[in-house]
Image (tube, rainbow, N blue to C red; front, side, top):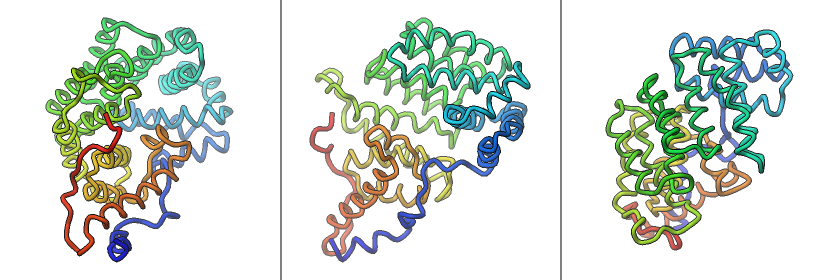
Amino acid sequence: MVRHTSGLAAGLPADDDVLLDVPDERLAPALVAAGRGEYEAAAKLLAATREAGEWENRDRYVTRLAAFARSRSEWFDDWRFAAPHDPDALLVKAELEVARGWESPARAELLRAVTPLITAAAEGDPGDPVPWRVALDHARGTNASHTVFERLWAEAIRRSPHHYGCHVSALQYLSAAWYGSHRECFDFAERAAQDTLPGSLVQALPVRAAFAYLTSEEGPGPAAKVPRERLDEAADLAIALSREYAADDPWPAEVRNLLTYVLVRLERWSDALEQLRLTGPYASSFPWDRISDDPLGQFLELRDGVRIEVAAARPLGGRGTGRGSLTSGSH
């Protein structure tokens, strides 16, 4: 094992080179400017995504800018004052207030008060699906009925049938942890993955369903148990998706991080090592922040563990299968 472990580091960046949640080359300057108290770069960036219909980028940028505004709000306060009806500022405000409401013990009550902000964001650009992703998150936090959820979902996919963020929010609503079941979650994820476009991140929905299942706090009864084959198929689909993107590409980094977690839980060590090599230096908070207060440290520790497992399966230089049974205690 010792003989092979060092060799398995090939293709993996050094620990000091791995970064958490690195912004892309478009978002980074906007965050730097916001740090100086200037909102113009953020406003220009979001306006460009809206005008070009770059909904996936728009969703990511809105989420990151809202998170930054939570800790440093001066730039955003100035933006809101200068352009109170700007559809991009309205969207960031809606995302910001939903995120704040989630952390309160009075979550449902606080989130209901945010409803007018989401409505204003949706009216700011009627073709934008991102306010409807915010609305789906909001529905989950306010205990909205399936009827309300289905109405919001219809509005979201009418604007962008393959929008990844809206699909993720819908999947969370349908998970066993919220208002659905493991079966509903997988059925929804698999249908969406089959119906989406080639290379779409929506093809990672089944592996998200697998993650929700494997991290479920309550062990499912026999009727709710998901067969091992279904978990492996979800992982295989995400592996095929990952291979469509270049190594060290930040765009699919979160999907690759998530896939690595699921592969580790399935004890598919060689497949997990392949994803770690493809991920390169781009660690993401999710999913590691769900299991550790130090997501970067957790990612690096897991990399070492995967290398050791792969090396242990090749004591004489042979190759392991990369597959195994579910880890002890897995659902």
